[in-house]
Length: 541
Image (cartoon, rainbow, N blue to C red; front, side, top):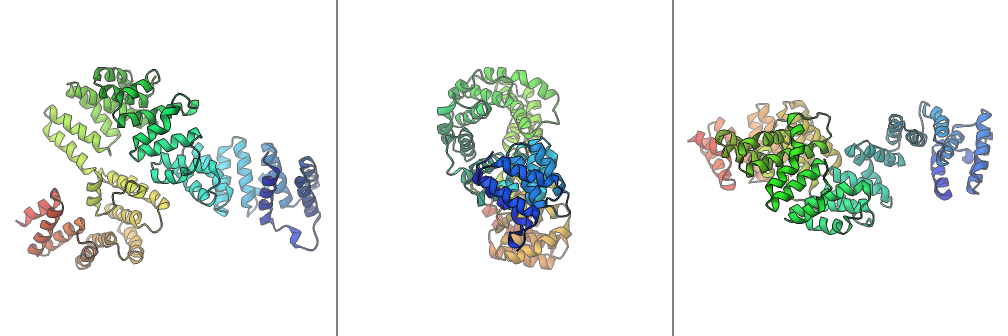
């Protein structure tokens, strides 16, 4: 049971929506009993309080406020079944109270009825967004593995209640799982690193921020004294950090005898063995895991499990190729690329080894794919200027969406962008601009038009907003308006490469070759490897 003070505070909050008759001149019998029960609680006599409220309920004269408190007391004293039975009729009212729904959801969760708990907490949050139900719903969704939905609930809660260290740690866990190191750092900023989970989350954050030495300093002193449920992740993060700093011997020492059939740890051990020059040992580490993976892929694997298998297949292929058998390596590398199609390093490796065995055109295609998936290239192709700040999580997420779009996974890219819009600052136009870009690529011009106008009005200084406006106008064949919008883009950002390229094409279509040539030559000064500008300039020639 919680402390009497906090319990009473919770009951006062629970009673507020019921308009208790303390504001009225005459109290009903139910309200009199309720006031007496609360006085018993304040005096520490929980049994007397329960006795009064149970007798009132049995008399059939208990008002909803008294029943709600009775259910809350049952819940706080550990009788979840009685709490659920008491509160359920109140949840079926035409307008159920959010506090009742919150306690009913907690009771259902204690009884193992996750679906009922989730529905009740969701409805409580809908009716009272800032209530503790948001916290409980966030924690529940972490248990269900839905880190994004959990983060949506927990982030506002911890901003309003920074003293809630459990919720902050949970929110930081979500931020790490969602690969948002900047968010994780802010949430963890003053939490004690004596907590092993906080320490592990800090280390993961440092690794994502490309500070492997920081991760090593946090974890290495505790690598042999870690709680059992955190051991595997601790070894994995520490080994990754050791590989990042080139210390293969330390990674091998850490992982020896601990790998078993864990694919993530096996891939790390094989990389460490390769790093110290024992490539054959690396192949031996991976060989027992490779055959079943290469034969068939389990469609029910969660993302982390598939990522681990992908690393095993990729490194087995890479080590085979480095050992001189590139032809045998290609099937493993190709499978790894299929499973992780947005990773430019894997495409680069595939291109290299295809070329090595004489598959020149196929190797060039893979190499071009690697180049197309780099951050700067995908931004340029979309006409976006996202920036390169490693702390800018929104930019990183939008770049990932652009990579999805670059391999024609447009619906998935749109879903990712719309998720990021829910987390990004309302003052950041980039998620909305990329959403418009994707809608245009999907041919959903009406939706794009509806989303664009308020964005241009709200951000009149955004070159990217006017660029997307121009692209929409081209799609509608309104070339005169499109030209004006392209020129406005360049007025705001004279080196906007996408606008220069597209305006040059529009000028070519309307017979103004010389001005188009000047724009394309400027593009090639700014970006000498711009293939689109080269082709268009050749067309003019």
